Length: 463
Ligand SMILES: Cc1cc2nc3c(=O)[nH]c(=O)nc-3n(C[C@H](O)[C@H](O)[C@H](O)COP(=O)(O)OP(=O)(O)OC[C@H]3O[C@@H](n4cnc5c(N)ncnc54)[C@H](O)[C@@H]3O)c2cc1C
Image 1 (spheres, rainbow, N blue to C red):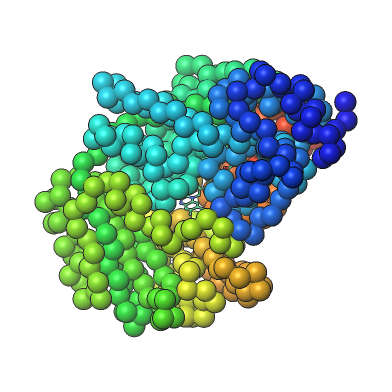
Image 2 (image 1 turned 90 degrees about the vertical axis):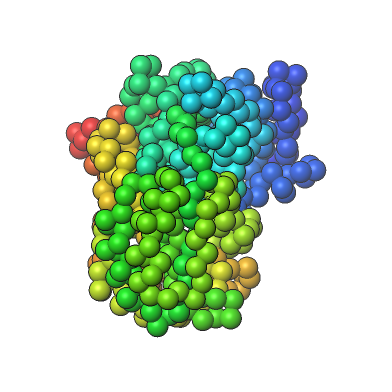
């Protein structure tokens, strides 16, 4: 049966009817505008229908319906993909944001988490037991997309990436089967979902390893612009010798008054007195304008950046991995940052090191296992009339930085940047990922993502 926008609501309701636990929201109905909105205000797409799933059976029904009518499908976790992959024009959106079940088992130090949870919601549940799993650094981000692409945050040095702490996941596959992926069941699928994004199925439940995480020593040091070069040079040397317990990020941007500024944020997740020792050289090497480093609950550092990322602003990001903060890279940043068109934007160097960098590049689908920085030009602004100059500035800085970057990028930072950049994100693991894709989703039902095309490499013999 062919369906169009007009008839979709009645067709869905007729077919899914009383079997569906969640709601269906269609164009023109109450709640549709909210249901289709995602984090990035640049994305303005109108799905044919939104299925607000509440459990795995709703997900299976949604997949079956979509396939039967040969409709495009998108899957929404926290809706924070800057590319806006959670929503598609004329697509059926499987919205999992209501699936927020969470069950902590303190005895085994594990948690089962629903795909609609945000980082903040999962942290709150696990911290009640003095435990945590590594996630990202802005608490409204969804655990689902973050984990499936990697998941880099303040615990990466001590505990690895989010995907490294995945013990198992339940998935609804393209042929509407429910499978468990773990190191013992469907191992190839388990390998693929740890870095390969939502290419292989819809995850209906994640099981993570937890770690004891008490109060942390965290906060930021801010410096005047004239110190930016020596600060960045010192920062690079300092963090390369830092213990696994310390993870850091450098940021460059503008103050609300439009003055360029540089800051170093840290999180030490070991004993506080040891952290004080470790951080002393960084805190004393120059006089910062502000030193906000202090002991704090882990949930406080996990939400410290939230204010800078309200939903609905317009975003354009460019990114790549940076191995060393070289003089050339610093010079480029010194030239461009003062010209940043929006004081809401930021250029970040998020450190990846320790446990997350020591995993073998082929052990999971996430290939970027090295001590380096996730370099991100995160431009954001509020007025559509400012879009042109913000996008132009971001592209110009990225182009100027390219000679200093590795030829690869973190998949979770990608916008809509074309197949070459997608392949750069999956790196040397791309051929194996296409083989897994051909096994679990040969027709590419799950393609509203940084897509692994199942036909890639067949004619050329790759994979
Ligand atoms: C403000 C902000 C801060 C960030 N900070 C960090 C950070 O510190 N560290 C880091 O590593 N990343 C960070 N990111 C990047 C983040 O990891 C990605 O944006 C990620 O995609 C967000 O996941 P989501 O579920 O919110 O997104 P969504 O847009 O809902 O989904 C992203 C992709 O995953 C797919 N997907 C979602 N749920 C499922 C599921 N259950 N099953 C299968 N596929 C699914 C979607 O279809 C889509 O393709 C940040 C992003 C933002 C916007």
